[in-house]
Every structure is written in structure tokens, then in C-alpha cells.
Length: 154
Image (cartoon, rainbow, N blue to C red; front, side, top):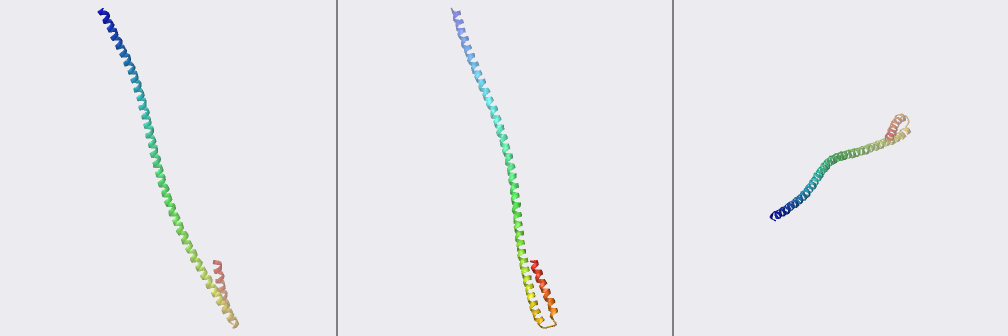
């Protein structure tokens, strides 16, 4: 009877140990699955980290290119502003020169007209006094030529 009890006890103990082993095996499989899942998640996180790092690097490179482009645009804008300023100065200078030339031409025309009127008057006076007309006619002709040249120059 003791042997039966011992055998039964051993059998129960063996069954309990077998159940425990099976339970441990199931736990080990679940742990293994969990570790595989964690490993897969870690690998995915590393890939994501690498992708994010590459995206950040690309963004930094793009930002540097845009900053360089902005500096070039600012330099071009500054150059254009200087050119516009020089053109305005040149235009103002040319306008001033035109005004001066116009005033000079007007003065020359007025002087030529005055000489022509004086010559006409002298001619009229001298024609009334005989003999001296040729000398005054030459001065009149010269004044008239100056007057015409001044008008054409204008």
C-alpha cells in the first residue's frame, strides 16, 4: 500500500512537475514572443530614428541652401539698388546739363536776334546815308547767319 501511495504520490508529483514544466514552457514561449515583439519594435524605432535623422540632415542642408540663396538675393538687391541710384544721379545730371544747354542756346538766340535787330537798324540808318551801305550790309548778313545757326542748333 505504501508503494502504491508512493507511486501515486510520485505520479502526482511528476504530474505537478510536468504541469509546471508545461506552464514554464508556455511562459517561455510568451516571453520569447514578447522579446521578439520588443526586438521588432526596437528595430522599427531604430529605422524611424535613422529616417528622422536623415530628414533633419536634409532639412538642415536645405536650410543652408536657402540661407545662401537669400544672401545672394540680398547682394543682388543691394547691387540693383546701387545701380538704380547711379542711374537716377546720371539722369538728374543729364537733365541739369540739358537745362544749362537750353538756357545757353536761348541766350545765344536772344543775342543773335539782338545783333540782327541792331544790324537791321544800322542798315536802315546807313542805307539812308548813301555810300556806307555795303559795310553795314556785311555786318547784318553776319548777324543773320548767327541767328539762323542758333535756331538750328536749338
